[in-house]
Length: 334
Image (cartoon, rainbow, N blue to C red; front, side):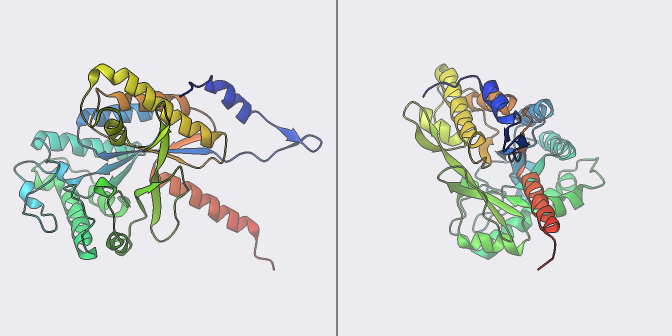
């Protein structure tokens, strides 16, 4: 893949005033949105690292939380997935009571900093064959476990607004394995979710509007042959090394990921400005290659004046606000 020329020159060209028709200023371009999200949200070190990146660049992220990470080995029996034995999880649990306490603190701090906390179900099971009742059971368990996490684990210091935050602010969802069915969408509506981010699209795409707004991670070109891959670290990990660690090639994998992210961004930034969505996990695959690429990308683009690196929640709020202002300014005359 060809390497990029200096992005600063492109940014200057795109943000400089342009004039036509005798000197009248052209209409300003829409901002370029970038939406970065994290699935699972286990390791405390990655909580700290991502929050630090947000503070440095002004970016705000969505954290799709697996609720089992708010249970320890002592409290794991609280959870029962649909059709599974009580206490079973595909992704384990929190490491200890102290580890859970640290994660609760991270969630509350991230929320205070403006990040979006969302639902990634609990035990990371493939729900493609679940009924709507199964999905609703999983959502109800998520809400109960996260609401009661401080008390369940015997941890002092539950914040005054915690339970209201869980029940009224966690309104986004991404399905484990991006595996969905029609029953899921019925359950999302029944439970009052604002958005779902479980889809996959052929390239960057606008969300589908409805009672539950539906977002899709795009396929993006990657590597020397520019083959399409889902814009998520795990998919890059499988593409690059077959899902096995190859730390000796980490720098090469980082560069390929960075160029793939920047290529996708630049195409939209210089074109239609469709939102760019990227997904990550709290696992440092291939010696952290994809997180390193993410940090480089975020520092490059999120500081631009006409780029907004926002959470899914805030993207919806911003575009909804524009729609409402547009309807208001249109007037009611016939």
